Length: 623
Ligand code: ADP
Ligand code: MG
Image 1 (cartoon, helix red, strand yellow):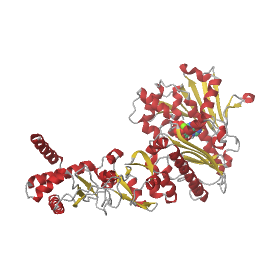
Image 2 (cartoon, rainbow, N blue to C red):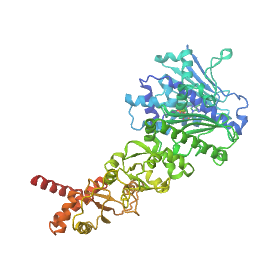
Image 3 (cartoon, protein in one colour):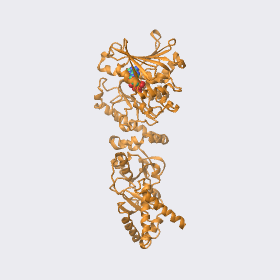
Image 4 (cartoon, helix red, strand yellow):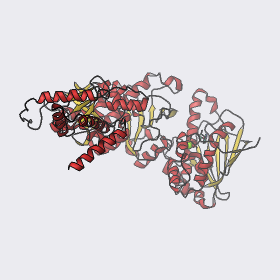
């Protein structure tokens, strides 16, 4: 029964973009079709492990590319799994790929968009860059009926029954007038070599006695490293990531593991962040093969979640070929391979960080927050993760490791100080840092959400406790300073004055803060906010509120800097019982100032502005 149907709206839009593409790399249509054909062969080969009758009549998987210059057609044919009528409708009439769908959102066919989509590869639909009519004839392995899908790529397609003697799919493209170059044998061969050399099935051109296999046709990951070129690695990376990674691999790891278990690995770390890095439904990036047969890309934890940006192939010699996908997860070989692969990746990262910190910093900026998830939940890899992790710190511009930090501990320092802040910039400007800086004590900056989770879990590193500098007391007294101590004689009655001010401030701010105390950590700023020792860091409370909607509603502690001129002035007002209104207004202004620096919201911005203007006015008039 012949039926005319309309494309899903998104497909129509995509087709518009594709058809109008002034896009230079139209040749990628062949890469896309060959990659689909290869997937189809992979899938049937896997099914045939349990049902060998599916491939009995034609056991040699093959992809054939041919052309007819007179009829102006190019054909790509495979003897893979094929598609039923429903599958033709679903696969070629809608967009299944969430990545492409995502990309299409907010695109409207501007030339910039076209380039973007061109880079990503639009899968099957890319045929409409070079063809004005396409026919797909397909017969599912195991079925006796075949169907033909045809379209000119303009909103509608037709689907009908047809005859086909063998399983698989034949795609015939009627080449557009301006795409005649694809009717040349050498051109087609060249494109196949360029993009599809690593494909695991023979790609054949020509028929009968003239048939030649164009691609190298052996699994790239099985070849010795020395025989693989950068270009081949890059193309493989592209294809193994389903066309979603258009960057250069940041790191290529190609190795063979021998010993109790044997497996070959070709893994890549991207240099560009995958758009779905934080999407829990994202597909797994590493494909599992068993003796060159594709099994699945759905084994959870073949690489752990904290390395989920890694793409590539793991090919085991030990797993049974007929293992069901469901049983994989429970197989101990998977667990053993997974820990060894994880150790290998981490040790490469560790080396890279030592050899080339600049390059490592680029990686860390993209994936550091993901890797640090391992510090939270991958105890087996803790030591290695601690050696890989890098942090910005108050000591300079470069990332530092925990080992470097520990080596630089000051005399008397027995804790690893860190400052939790929304950004490195904010951390550097933090008033809580002042005394640490003055004493030359290094402070690590924790700027990722995940830091708030792993820090409490880790507790310490090399017997040094992690200690937040915005929480509890600063414990700075016992650390030896770089600079000579400030030994100005203590003024008569100074302590009483300070105590009196503290008492007055506590009373004024009793509804706003938990306590008002004398600060050890301030040098230049008059005040700052910290969390009580037993509470969560202020920044963490805010994080949790934002991400989990959790509102701890705890009160902070306001610390004052005894040596700051503003505080000195307040002390003398309070000591002499004068200017109480001004003391009150200033106290509230200082509290709001501390909140602003901390990134906390003001309870009443209007009041703050009024107080500030009043203070400015006085300053201007007096000054
Ligand atoms: P993708 O390959 O990223 O899924 P495509 O647009 O290239 O997207 O293909 C869409 C779907 O059509 C594929 O996922 C597959 O299910 C089906 N398909 C395409 N070509 C073939 C083929 N030669 N044999 C079997 N199925 C195919
Ligand atoms: Mg595809």
